[in-house]
Picture 1 (tube, rainbow, N blue to C red):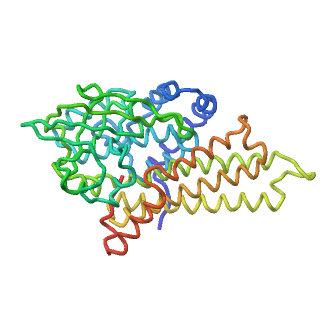
Picture 2 (spheres, rainbow, N blue to C red; picture 1 turned 90 degrees about the vertical axis):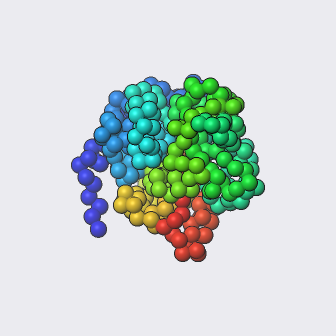
Picture 3 (tube, helix red, strand yellow; picture 1 turned 180 degrees about the vertical axis):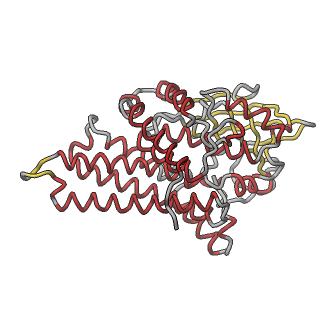
Length: 402
């Protein structure tokens, strides 16, 4: 096994690391405490990231993107997560669906939608899936016709009429391109009747709702929005009618390791801050890093971060090779990275003691952000249940999910 990173991967890692050090870290705590979601959106950072090629990093070079593989995206995602999880999520949502731009779209769709994304430095994408009555259900664990998934697409000649509400959507109400998941027939399972449409936020019938105020990932938005008789031409349909399950299994192989890497960055940030603090802070006549209790906590943090990173890299590499087992391993990645990040932030708080809750230190922010991933991109419990269900059925390579 060779863990040597390619020169291309190292280049992008260093670009992201420099961006975090010079742009994000000097101002992230101030921005995190701005009072409203709308004013926290880091449009200036998104534009700067675009100039560096980070916004379009997952798009193939043939379309003007960076052409990065899943391993590179995971490594860059960790670097951005060190700076701010919310900002990392904004870009990861773009990367996630760049794969569908390049692989799932027809040539005609590519001509229509890729320029919209590539030519606008503030264009980000979002997945319209979660609804008021459907959260973890939609991840594929429950798929009976009575699932409370209400967004419908009714055929009307060469068009579809979409109605419904989406809630808690990452990049919601700030994105310009949406991948909207709908039901064509409420009498059938979602896996049989689900369909995905590409829509833009300026299309008639797209009704922006509101940003949810939240305690974590505060620079990213979670929005609620509605579709009111949105008339969409059949050319906006992705892959085909009733192909939602096929779309998940074929075109989002790196979704979980990429997401896991972003929260791992939060755990790493907490570890690095606590390590430096332990070197500088003196108690009992010596730096606290020389006290065994502190040293043991730092050792635990470093060990678990390295283990979670190795799991992410392995899974990302397998996903790049389109090895089917990467889908189940991706579920493990997400669970492991979230738990490791949370524990690292907790231990960092122990090392700082009472200082950990003070606003002049970032630990309380890191802990808020890490906590959010225990229920982001699928709950911990649901991810494990899905993985075990696939293993028990002997179909590890067929598991799917966003």
